[in-house]
Structures are given as structure tokens and as C-alpha cells.
Image 1 (cartoon, rainbow, N blue to C red):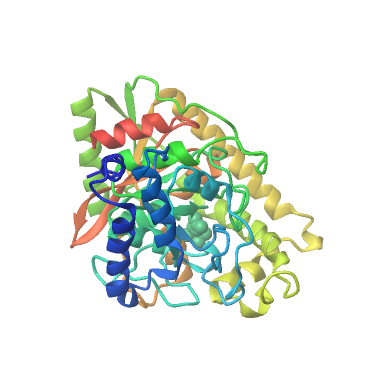
Image 2: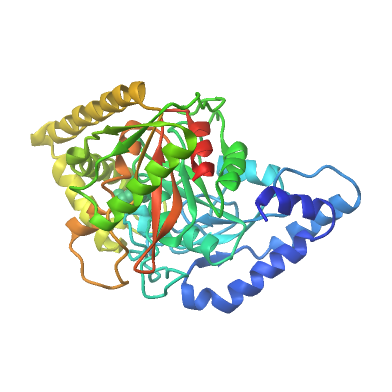
Length: 441
Ligand code: GLN
């Protein structure tokens, strides 16, 4: 049953919103300790559900998401709930207002069921950097669930909610979606308001849905998208999807394991055959993706975190942030030293421009690009890996953030019993293109 069908059932009284909340509540009660997904639950969710049920009973208007339960990454403000970015720095911080995306979900009668775990301040790709312990992968408790929206992906995979919201700065929606076997969409930059999102890297961050199916992701996006006076980068758009002719396939042999490259290539060929599309091999600037991304992240993250000075919000981040947060703060303060006169950031901006140009060129030749979401299989929680190895997980996801284009990860299959996602990228505002292809996979 997809989300539209579930809403229909709720509106027809076949399932009440209260029952829906309670069913998830029971599962959460039973398994959350083991999985470490929810950091805080919304104590008022049953009352909100009752109110929706009573409107349905009295034939009053209810929204597109009536009675559905949503899990929210702990860096998106939900009024009166604790939002701590999985950090000691903001341990007891209560959100003073609803983020725009939350207002929109509530206006359509979705129920926020709680706030979920993540990598601390969204820095990480494995779900292990949370100050409150790693999120577990519901399919195999020993494995990382991916990150940084680890709790959002795991909550969907564990049936703890109907859908979840995450944020994606360099892959943080798509990466955990891939490891947990769910769908994760990063919309075009500017499609969804960032008002009320605790920023990690402002020029990359985008909020998006994690769901069981592509149809569900499309539904959630239709609710949260749109121009917002509180975020000047947003625009009101109708997503496009021009008739498809050519599929771009990325040669990932130098970056991904042979098994992953093989699986994704086979799928792309199958898709092209079914859909009568030509395949064209495209070369993405993968060799500069990580360096460009991380210089910009270190710089912008350092700047973004200066507000956590121990006086205005929570505790001093330079003291109470975890190791990965500290690494980025120290790195960012080094890169931005006055004597360098901004040269590293400027160089990174030039490289970013090059990525933008490359994407523009490629999307003149192909309608969408197919590649893996992550280059290697999930490691075990706690396994020693180097920072370089950790950052290398992002090689296929960060380019869409650099180019501000949309991308989706959908489940493709398993290798060694570990989930593998396939990624579809398209030109700016071509979300429809992505959805159509994803549905055909
Ligand atoms: N893994 C990437 C990083 O650590 C992506 C993080 C994100 O998208 N929030 O920066």
C-alpha cells in the first residue's frame, strides 16, 4: 500500500489516524532501544491524530497527508520538540518555531511522530558520529545505516513511520537510502525551503523525503516544495520531464567496486532496452568532486557554526562538538586564515563552476545520468576506517550538490546481503524525469 492509498483508507475510516500512530508507537517502543533511531518522540501525536479523526468523522476538510506519520531529522525545527543535531552542543534545545517544510506537512495533516538520530550536525556518511550513539541498520544491526540522515532512512526501513524528512548536503539523503534499501530524493537546490533547517553548508543543503516508493517521494515533494519568503533561494516551479531519448551511463570502474559497477551497468542497460533509450557513456568530473566539496564544506561549516558560541544557543561547539565536527571547524579555520586571502575557497568555487559547466554540457546530450549511489558496500559499525575512506563514500553524490541539480537513490538489489542503491541524476528542475525513470526501474 502506498501513501496515497493509506490516506484514502484513513479518510474512508478504514484505518483511523489514532490507530496509525499507535501501530508505529508500538513498534518504536519494542525496537527503538535496539536500533537507536528516535531521539525524541512527539508526546502530542495521539491528540493530533484524534483531531484529524474527528474532522474526518464530521465530514470536514482534511489534507493530502491526513493521518500519516512522519519522522524528522533532528536538524529541522519542529515547534516545541527538541532539536539537537545529535550533538551535546544543543542537547536540550527546543525549536522555537516550525520550519517551512513542517508548516507545509502540518497544513496537509501529517503528524510528526518524533525526531530522529543523525550524524552530528550532519557531518558524516555512516550514522556513527552522533553524540547519542550510532543508528543501527534495521536489516543488519552490525552494519552502518549510512548517513547523515541515518535515522530518517532507518525509520522508514524499520516501519517506524510512513515517511521521513532528511537533509542532503553531499549525499546525506541518498547515501542512507542506499544502505537501508529505501528511496531518497535530493531535490533541485531552491525547490524546497531551508527555513528552519540548521545549516551545515548553506550553498549545498536541501531538505528531501525518504520513503518506501518513488510515488511516495513524489507525493511528499509536491507538499514541501515551493517559493518561501523566508528563503530567498527558493522558486515556485513546475517540475519538468522532457521526452527521454538518451540515458547517460557513467563509467565508474575507477571509483566503485567491480560488483557495484557491474550491477548498476546491467540495470541501466536493461532500463534503456525496456524504454527504448540510447545509452551514452558520460564522463563526470569525479576526480575533483571530493576535494572541491570538502573545501567548501569546511569553510562554510566553520562559518555556520560560529553562532554556537556558548552564549546564544546551547554550549560552545569548539568544546562540546565531537571529533568529526572539530575536524571541520579546525580545518575551516585554517583554510580561511586571513593570510591566505580566501584563495582556497576561491579555487574551490572555480572548480565548482567547472562542475556546473560540465553538467550543463552533459544534459544537452543526455536526459538523465545513471550511476551507483555509493562506491562500496557498507562497513560494520565501529570498524576502523580512515577519514579518506569515509569521505570516499560521497564521491558519487556530492556532484549533484555542487551543481545544485536533483538526484534520487532507489533500491537496486543486494550484494553479499547488503543493500545497494542506484542513483539517477537529471538537470535542474527535472524531478519529473527522475521520477519516471525511477518508476520504470
Ligand atoms: N557525508 C557528507 C559529509 O560528511 C555528506 C553530509 C551531508 O550531506 N549532510 O559532508
